[in-house]
Amino acid sequence: MSKTVAVIGAGASGMMAAICAARAGAQVVAYERNDRVGKKILATGNGKCNFSNENMGSEWYYGSGRRLIDEVYKTFGLREAKAFFADLGMRMRNRNGCLYPASEQAATVLDVLRYEMMRLPVSVHTNQQVVEVKRHKGGFEVVTADRQRCRCDAVILCCGGMAAPKTGSDGAGLRLAEALGHRIVPTVPALTALRCKESFYKQIAGVRCDAGLALWVEKRRVCEERGELQLTDYGISGIPVFQMSRHAAYALREQKYTTVEIDFMPGYQDNEYERFWTERWARQKEQIMEQFVTGIVNKKISLLLLKLAGIKETERAADVSDARRERLSGLYRAFTVELKGTNSFDQAQVTAGGVDCREVTAQMESRLVPGLYFAGELLDVDGVCGGYNLQWAFSSGATAGLAAAGKTEAS
Ligand SMILES: Cc1cc2nc3c(=O)[nH]c(=O)nc-3n(C[C@H](O)[C@H](O)[C@H](O)COP(=O)(O)OP(=O)(O)OC[C@H]3O[C@@H](n4cnc5c(N)ncnc54)[C@H](O)[C@@H]3O)c2cc1C
Image 1: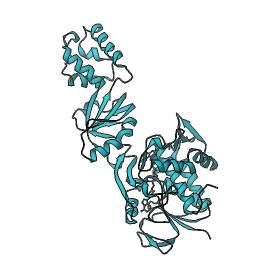
Image 2: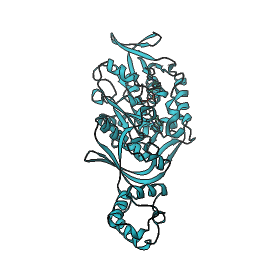
Image 3: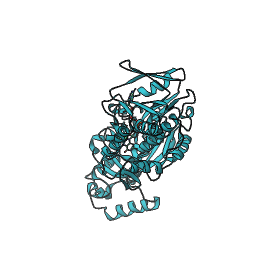
Image 4: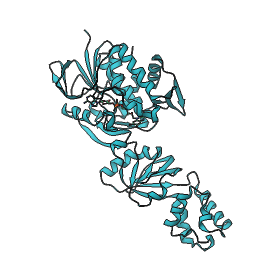
């Protein structure tokens, strides 16, 4: 007899779980609190949906689920995701390893998933918030906010984390998991901008530049990134900042002194850098400092660094003391800003933390409650920018869907 599977949350992971469970022969009911499914998918990849990456593996992820990721990707990894979407008629485009639908429309990814749910069919209940999952003799009872009840053999929690709560994921799923006895690793916003303490950001807001960044937590250099830095009126943003934000968020949560060292002239070896300045001071010594710094990096940055080095824009280069010259060149190379926070979950792309993966099997089943499965961002897994979070949502969803229906391999 076929199993009845309830999927809670119809985002990326939930839709994939529902499709895979239904294809494996289960009767599937999906509950979604929004008036439509997959709302967050439409916002991904700037509306283009970067759904995966050619360089896939657990090394691109953080959290307690790294070992789990390796196992899950053996069942449903990059190859299977590409085949799955190709089979649904979606052409793909590879941009420097990042995979997008060829239409460059996130709606394509959502549409092919929706159409497949309709075809199977999966019974989708929108505007239905699940408020309780009760264990029941040999199965579960799912209770919605308007007191509808549904008995099922297996439940897959796919409610997402806490990022972008306007799309429906506000942490409700974490509370359901906790109520069923699961440990929740503390959650923080990730893939988000960082707020800084200094008061000069209004002067440089809007600047975008190539930079090397190093995150320091107290005396420890935690990670390094290189890429386009964006200065905002409250701090720093851009992909390299997003990539380090989860480390910063955990350090700040523990109230640790956390800084970012910015190299505005990345790519120079130390001796090349020294030579650059020696030659410039010699060749441009008759210029006033505003002229002298023109052309090194974005002018707004240069004028700020001049000020911080105690050098007037109108001063002649030849009159700048050695100590102030050294301060200036030091600032271009290692400009330290102090962090006071991250942006909130409202502006974060993902959640770091969530259901502790040590309590979950490679089939995405709870080790504490047989028949309960998890998928997606609800779990303590967060990937870097580049399609890793959606691949995780799809892979964990597919694995959970198959297992909940009683199968271990895609048919
Ligand atoms: C702006 C933005 C851009 C992004 N861009 C990318 C990108 O390009 N590439 C990438 O890989 N990742 C990207 N991400 C991250 C990625 O979208 C998520 O990691 C992924 O969608 C998570 O899927 P999920 O199914 O776990 O959760 P979600 O997509 O959050 O889905 C959870 C669903 O569950 C529903 N729900 C929650 N609680 C309940 C309940 N109690 N009852 C019923 N329904 C419930 C919610 O309404 C929601 O529809 C981006 C995220 C954001 C916010």
